Length: 389
Ligand SMILES: *Cc1c(COP(=O)(O)O)cnc(C)c1O
Image (cartoon, rainbow, N blue to C red; front, side, top):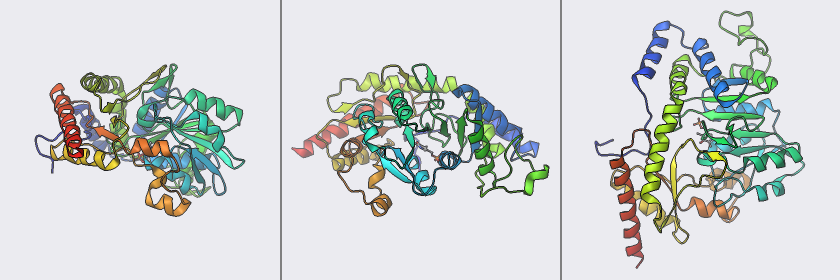
């Protein structure tokens, strides 16, 4: 499938250090529930300003357990954004609660704080706040609203490892935060996720729930321990293997290097595209630092989603990997069926979503790659304008 000339949408950055670490685990004979996961957890906790970290097999699993550990279930409402990857809302449904969407700010693409308060009802149990594309804008405002209404914030920081707002690390902005380590994230474990918190009770419950509801407190139950076949609650198997954790340990140690490489690529794009009359660049809000997850540009007002889609298809034909990050969650077929959403419900999210183009973004993109992507994008936009007449 991949030709030599293809510039993929995303490509993981795996060095011989990761390969050696994975090999060492395979040779050790201990493939699950061992010291490497613990080491990975300690690294993520320390880096993000948290006392506890609980590794799981995906970001989605992490959000699911975080909601469960906070006692959220049927009859409850959780506020979140309609403009995100679907895993920001699905875990709310998985625990039997109802997602309540708040339209976004057209500049930052995060939930508009001015509209957040109006979505709070007596059934609201939490705010699931997302740093969309790694942008922590408005989190200070969310915090004020949450405090006023005595609601906890669950931070879906799956796109925000290494981002900061007013000097604070993403992952430490709410009661609990969840990172994801799918291959397109800042760091990857193949598949994986991590729950972070300073709340001991939430951490212990998540530890139990990720491993078949085994007893909480003290150490993690291990194969040899007395408690291995004792189950105190309905739990899942959401564990992260030692093989995956080994990848995570090395990637975590390389995080600063990875963030710097991604910053370099983002700057090349910004230099090339700044001032383009048809393109809106990603916004970096005051007081925030972005550890780039993706590089998503937008076509200016006036372009239709059909035109955007043709531009993406044209780019793909030139072997430039692009995607429409993200279609609105509330307009996904089963959200319409289940909750009765329809076009027009969240007009800003819909307008933004219809004009986004995620450009290829990986640590090792060269100036030549970026030039080619930008020239191709410019060409496809011009072609679309010509066919408009
Ligand atoms: C990646 C991501 C997740 C989690 O995804 P997994 O594939 O389950 O690890 C959750 N929320 C957002 C916003 C994401 O980008």
